[in-house]
Image (cartoon, rainbow over all chains, first blue to last red; front, side, top):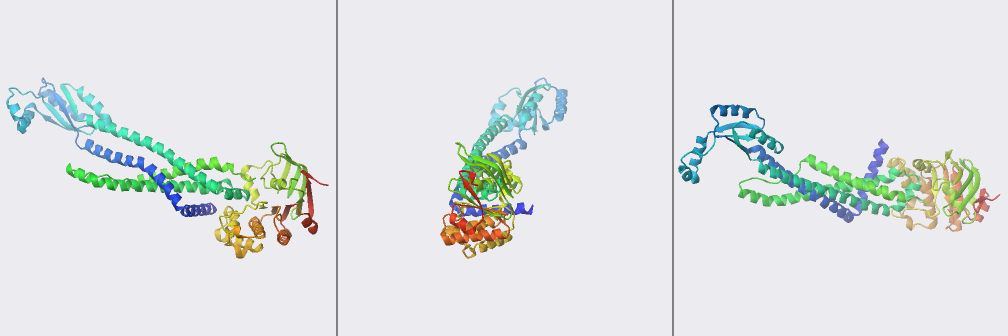
Length: 302
Length: 217
């Protein structure tokens, strides 16, 4: 066990020394990987921020109105109120009679003339309530409400929420496709780096095989290299996205102030950052694995 | 220790490098393999560390059958062999010392212990003062001695040398041969392939004379 650890440690320090010996090549490789990862990562960050805004709005106060049929009487209304209170997703239903509604309109300045010209009250009785139903449940809720007796019309502020949700879903899909493509790019970059490294060390590999190095010993430094390069690329990607976010936030703050909002973009939490680093390192390892399997067996001493 | 029985080795294209080869080398022996170039000396030496496998017949090294040996077992076989190659195979991207350290990297020695052994090996071949030099700056004789240091650093039971004196002047060649003799005297089995008849006659060792892949009687 301690031998195993020591060998890994020796390989690691050797790999780091090798990377440090070619700082320009290392920097270029890490930059390529960093930029490739930064694109989907930045998109993911924007989506996460938009998603949290959408979530705030939907859980905040999406209003729903339930308009009653003209012939609904007091018993119907109280029966309906009792029913409403039992339906999940309906919160604090409030009854607004047609007289109250008319009074409300009369008090708003630009409508008072129109209201005064009316001889009868054209407004129906209504229930107003908030809903905490998620985007997925809204449609079912709407159908359920519509089927209640004496209900003439149901109006849920859900259409735009649905639109936002589907836009976000589209965005997520785009980011996912982008991430998949660029992950392949990362694997390809590592594949090539490792191939070059194997060619450079051809003599050493051959001699090592001749004097008794196992295959796993010969492979190990290349796996380390792929892993480290991928991880460094991940760090670069996080740095790029973070810097871009800071620049964007400067402009966003000005814009948000105009709308009286304090919205700004938030960066990933620690778990997300670590997950990204692990993902990048694993992709690097995968590229190294493919490259090593492809190229190392070709070097046999003769 | 090393035993060939009816060994035949033919390469693709039908070239027969060795045929009907049978001999045994006992532990602690020093044996010279002679013959003109193309007689099969290198092929014979390559069969022992499983660089090549026999086409038919059996090659036994320390009781292990080379022909049927699993790929994964080969590294462990080679760790008990000290190999000195015709083309030396030194690494010119690192120092003399690091060349000797290479075989110790995968045997699990602690760095301090490995460094001590590497210096001891360099001392034995008289290169300790040059440990920081790049092998490219060494003379031909010194490079050959470096190869020997790398071959013996793991204290193998068997030393195999392919034309170790080929590119050396008489004095350096004598030094190198003397080194093999001193390893042999402490119990290491030594096999040396050479076409240098004068060298062989001077030492009067056991000789396996090869001609066109067969042992001369």
